[in-house]
Image (tube, rainbow, N blue to C red; front, side, top):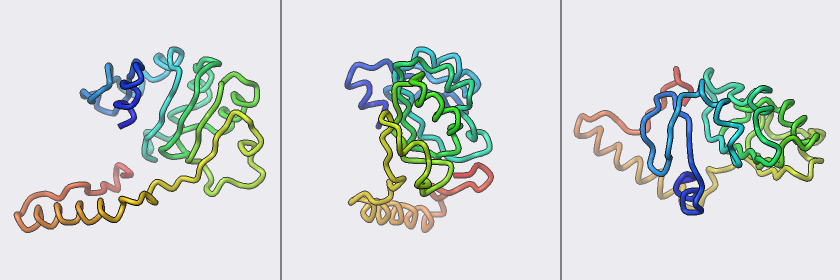
Length: 165
């Protein structure tokens, strides 16, 4: 959905996945190991990654340093994907234009965290489950899976604890 909205505004959209398969509205998909090479040209970096061993520190100090000073970071995934100390440093020194964050290493975000005092950071509680449509979506998913179960088919949206999601 993010890619579709970005394309509607004429943005050049690229992305990273463990297995770089085509994604609608994304012009290029690359493996995570190539992320740092793409960061210097990014105006906006949107992280929507789950917390897995592979995503912890996905944006570490080197990746944060690779972002241009006019770039914005948007993290709606998990706080563990970003090195918060490196991000605070980049935002405080204005080596990064700004950030929108709704996920943190420690939640809720402590009252004394530096993010609260930065004028180039927008903070939001990590609360995507509160959509007014969540009840309908849950019922729809349950009904689809009930039908799949009755037909002897594999269930959709099964969590894989080994992957972390």
